[in-house]
Image 1 (spheres, rainbow, N blue to C red):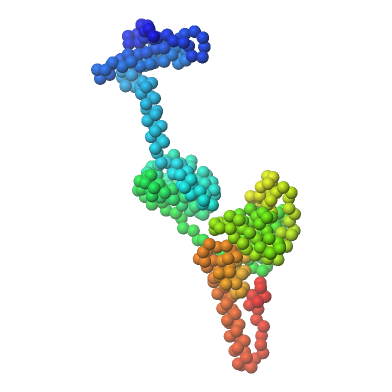
Image 2 (image 1 turned 45 degrees about the vertical axis):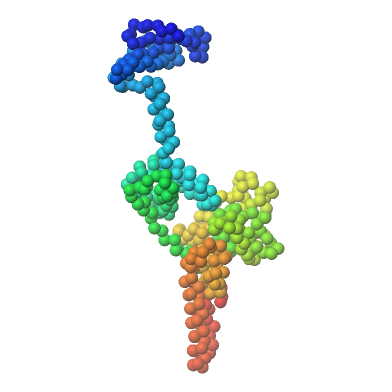
Length: 388
């Protein structure tokens, strides 16, 4: 294309077909020298870029003074930045890679929700080396001030795992500080007295949300976990043999637990919803219930249970405590009923069983002592709950 001079030295234009319309338009170019080398650069189109000879001249001056870059240089810089960004192992990218390589981990869904809520916006675009101990500590303090000590521990554990994953895989260098995870007291066991159980049963009977009430009843008599109860399907119930199949539990492999008479009574009181396979169906057709916290909390208050009592997890603890304190259930059997992966998880209830055995031993000693002294045999109640 032919060059056309302008009134500005080093600025010329060529004519070409107009973009998006008929006719032609001017394409302005500038010529200048840098380090003794002549450079020709495109300034822009007359209509598409609203370019004029005067603006092209200003652009040429900026190029000479180093205040601007040519379009070719801009494209090269953009491509270099794009490639550099693609090679950065940010916290978000590391987490995505971790999730892909640990896809079989059943708790990843819950952890991904925590990552999205607490970590992605704060640290997601940073590489591990860009993390500051002060920023990590601020996140911990913020969550603890909100009363979310457990959340703080879980979130910081996820962050620490992400960093360790990057370092172990050779994707990122080690960070200069240690991510401190708050320690939790996971040995808390919740129990209910006979009076509290009676009050809870009355509150369950009186509550208008009988679906929530049945979930709590079922948790009380089976000790099953919240998610296991919510996801329970009718096909998982073997009424003839008296077993409950727990599919995809927290521990990993599917489990089978006995269906006692009390659990069967709860299930017999529930009507199956047509087209929905779940025992506790949700509002969405074909899906299970996911949340009824308000009903649980209302029932807890009506029963006069402590504010810190967790309706479903607490009932699981109460179920285990009742069996352990009866003195009639060994730790291995309790482990199997609770579907604990290891016996260490069941050991928190061992002291309750030991106390029951001690009472039984004391009773035997008392009877023998009375016999030796010629006294009358007395009936001593070991456990009001079981009547043993």
